Length: 297
Ligand code: ATP
Image 1 (cartoon, protein in one colour):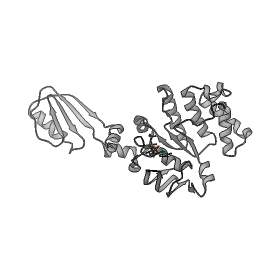
Image 2 (cartoon, protein in one colour):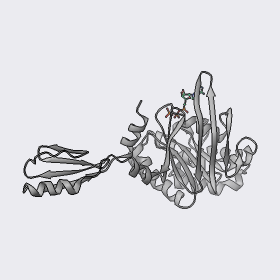
Image 3 (cartoon, rainbow, N blue to C red):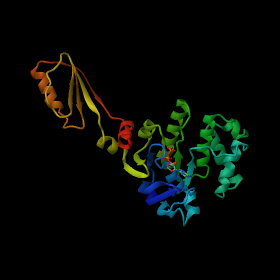
């Protein structure tokens, strides 16, 4: 089943074509990384999915429900954690969660067990009566995530959920997201921490200037666009030979994966000269490098 299906989506603001005909699907249970440089169109796409932006062309379904025609049902499937805080600063933490549940028609008495569970889960249980404005940045992030989960949605849309949080909290949030994804929640994640997306997401979709430029399983993308290499350190300087994608640099030889991978020829060449290999390591390309190459202006 498709959790989210976007077909031929266009969205313009006055003077800006933010989304230029994008299509992609997110399968139920996927951990989907949505990447792109600043201004690429990530938040606009999310806003079209959740009903905060009106799109001019295309259609979007969430678990088969059209976000325009069946918007009440479509929205119930989604929990959102926006990039910017949009809380009433004078509401207490518990009230933030209770009011949110109210938007989905859940009464206070019915949601209280869930509120208590989430406050405990996000280590906010001692603070349920504290106003939002008095929380630290990390607590605000945790509350944003707790709020997105209060009506037990099937899909979570997280727009930079770890922006500005410390390393320890980031690791905690990663572990929590991995767990709920394993338990069945579909997650769409945007983040500028590309290592985080590489670590967490099964699928990576890259948007650039309002167009999708990559959308595939993380492993496929890394294998397909890998520009890694093997580094060989030798005890003596080797004679150079002219091989495609092989660099000789004093007693270091780099054999790039993008070429024909001439490792065998390089080793035979070294053996002929009686040169010993002292060290050898494979250097993988990172998603960050691939992302930069794909989105470079
Ligand atoms: P970031 O990583 O910086 O959050 P993004 O990928 O989420 O960027 P969007 O916020 O979707 O990008 O912006 C896409 C384009 O649409 C940008 O050119 C932006 O200036 C423009 N834009 C976004 N929101 C509005 C708006 N409400 N009115 C006018 N233009 C907008």
